[in-house]
Amino acid sequence: MTDFKFDVESLDLYYGSFKALKDINIQIKKNEITALIGPSGCGKSTFLKTLNRMNDLVEGCKVEGTIKLDGQDIYNELDPITLRRRVGMVFQQPNPFPKSIYDNVAYGPRIHGISKKSKLDEIVERSLRQAAIWDELKDRLNKSALGLSGGQQQRLCIARTLAVQPDVILMDEPTSALDPISTGKIEDLALELKKDYTIVIVTHNMQQASRISDKTAFFLLGDLIEFGDTKELFANPKNPKTEEYITGRFG
Ligand SMILES: Nc1ncnc2c1ncn2[C@@H]1O[C@H](COP(=O)(O)OP(=O)(O)OP(=O)(O)O)[C@@H](O)[C@H]1O
Image (cartoon, rainbow, N blue to C red; front, top):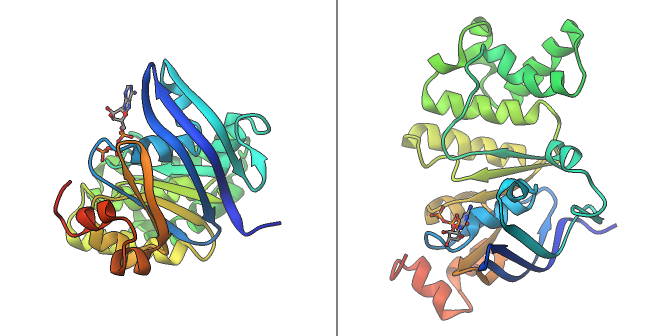
């Protein structure tokens, strides 16, 4: 067994005739944070969504190559429901359901067949604690999630993802709609969660990538230009295009 969570080989992705990802080869390690950076439209979100087959829902989207999760081909050996339970996703805009805080977190476990109240209570508490928001919310579990601040909603969405006990959490610019204090909380949370989970995060914020990630992947026009240790990539980028991007000369 390797310590790679994902092993991506020769991945091409097309939206109709447009090739959005070109021959991507990357191995994502367990219990690390991998940051995906690059200018707008370079394929970061597309790549992220490919990891749990969210692009299957896009008409005309075609994927070639292989993506293995713990050695299993996600297109041929895993069904999408199992895959998405194991590989959860948090989006740019917090998207709680118009339900109570409790019901948001219990939603996934209920879908997976858990109905016993004591078990659900336990999962809700565990998930909210893991998302570092239990103390703030424990006295208002039956209130609507829509009444929370943006930062709280995002941590609630992380708790909702954790409730089904995934292995991997995909985060698509999770802090871009948040203020600096809420951003700091999500970053601290990501660092805490990597002890138990593998995290892949899309960010436009270079400081964020260097603060929290172990590895960084730089995408440009559908190509993976450079991938490596975050400190190394920021201190000594090997490709001049990476250097231009991280020093702010384009993007
Ligand atoms: N559903 C879709 N149908 C057709 N083209 C798409 C679709 N989604 C994305 N694209 C195209 O694929 C390319 C990559 O888009 P993607 O959203 O992955 O980029 P990104 O790097 O995440 O950008 P951003 O930083 O702006 O979110 C872009 O040219 C985009 O227009």
